[in-house]
Image 1: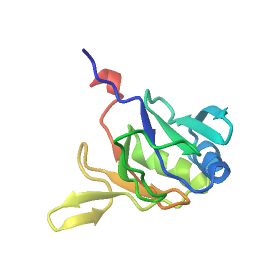
Image 2 (image 1 turned 90 degrees about the vertical axis):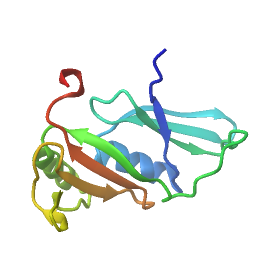
Image 3 (image 1 turned 90 degrees about the horizontal axis):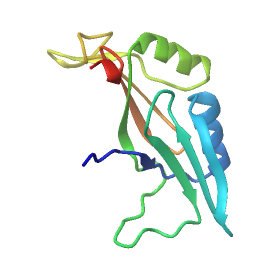
Image 4 (image 1 turned 180 degrees about the vertical axis):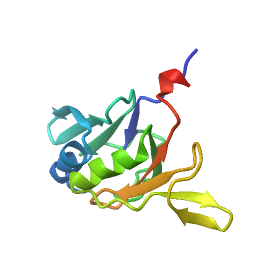
Length: 143
């Protein structure tokens, strides 16, 4: 049996601001923006080429046994791209505040691209949820 990661909840304070950030600035496809019950809204967005989406929820009860995440508490969610320099340019052009490209070197984090699998950048959404972008050598279907 396959266990596929399909949706990751991202805790946000302002649904419309988050929708604009992920849709307009990050280029995610807004798959759904719906009030599923009175006062319960879901926005689902998918990064280009991904099979996994993010979900921003408002007014939804916490799943029994689950813990509620505070806005800004999600850190280290990782996206992979085949060209990190082009991805960085695109984010900057869209108005996202993204770090320089860095790699892990002999002394820790160093500026510039590294070897295969060793080039990273990061950014935060308006609530402070932190994302990491890593350069992968090829598309997932080719690995």
